[in-house]
Length: 158
Ligand code: ADP
Image 1: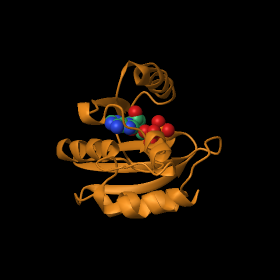
Image 2 (image 1 turned 90 degrees about the horizontal axis):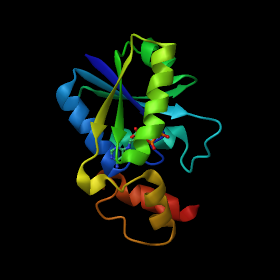
Image 3 (image 1 turned 90 degrees about the vertical axis):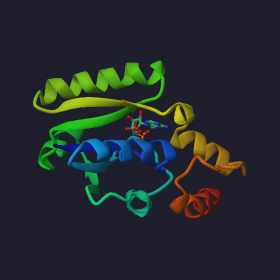
């Protein structure tokens, strides 16, 4: 089964990477889908985000794509039969439920499957990492090692 994991990944965190790796152990193919949302102001360009994800994913059943428009449409175009999303806390659940239900209405053949965050990553988001890095705090363990130096330097510039 081919699945896609859509998100903003601005930047990819250790929590995102854990979801990608766990999904790649369960499914034949995982496409990490960087969705470009013109209403969301990102720190990294889509190409920079793609570069960082590609630097840290290992499995040869993992691909990275940049998408625009509706996630389900893009997932369908890629031939994915399910969308993977991560849930950290109840606060994520309400938003994720709304998105998943809207996507179900748009395209009933694509299921949304949820993976629960590891406890050590349940507080972790790209925004938390940016806040810490921009204020000179330690991001040890929060970013994948392969991109940590690059991402931290880049975040300091902002
Ligand atoms: P979006 O803007 O689409 O929410 P994000 O990059 O913030 O994009 O997140 C993509 C997905 O990864 C979401 O389903 C989010 O809940 C999940 N996620 C984010 N951080 C973590 C984490 N630390 N552990 C598990 N899942 C996470």
